Length: 107
Image 1 (cartoon, one colour):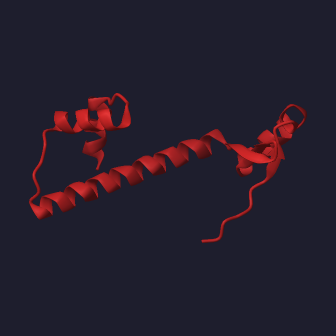
Image 2 (spheres, rainbow, N blue to C red):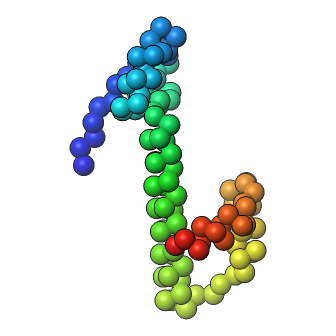
C-alpha cells in the first residue's frame, strides 16, 4: 500500500488561509501542526462519515467472526447483559443496548 503525503500547514495559517484550507480539505485531508508537530487532521465532513461507517462495519465484522469462532469451539457464554456490563466497566463508557441489538440485526 502506498501512502500519499498529506498537505501540512501550521495552525497559524488557519485564520489567514481558512477558505483555501477548507477547499483543500474537501479534496484530501490536511494535517494541522502546532510547533512543528502534527496535532489534528482536517477533512471533509462526508469523508469523516464514510471513515466512521467503514470502521463500524469492520468492528461489526470482527465481532461476528469472534462469535462465530467461539460457537465453533463450543466455548462458554455469558448473558448479553453480563457482556455489556463487562464492556462498560472495561472501557469506562455507557452502552446503548438497543443500538447494539439493531446493529446485530444488520450483520
